[in-house]
Image (tube, rainbow, N blue to C red; front, side, top):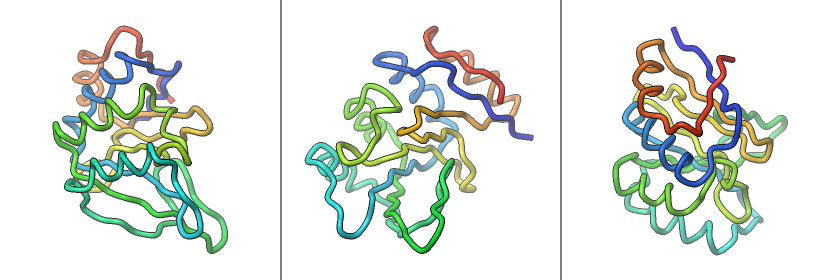
Length: 155
């Protein structure tokens, strides 16, 4: 059974990098969003997508992703990338907080997924909302790896 654990305070700097490193072993893939047709992401965001290019697994127009659902017919572009040491390095150097992943400066709503597509880490960056979805065994492992500044609260 999965439980949800909300981040109580923003993980910034080393806490952000440590959080990503702590949960990365549970995930195979991560996703980022772009607003879609007729919009233009900032140069920083385009550079991040270029750096992640060789890790790209899929790019699809979607109406839902962890924590968000679009009502109506609009879509956003979701990019799914292979999560490995190289791509994790891009994520830890392109931003200093989960809540930095806001369009148009960067792609939006960073999320980590297991091989079965279930969420490990979800964010709605514009709302300063971030959470982990973990089994009890995963929680025990992750808590032991988290930096001291990262605080979780069961949801």
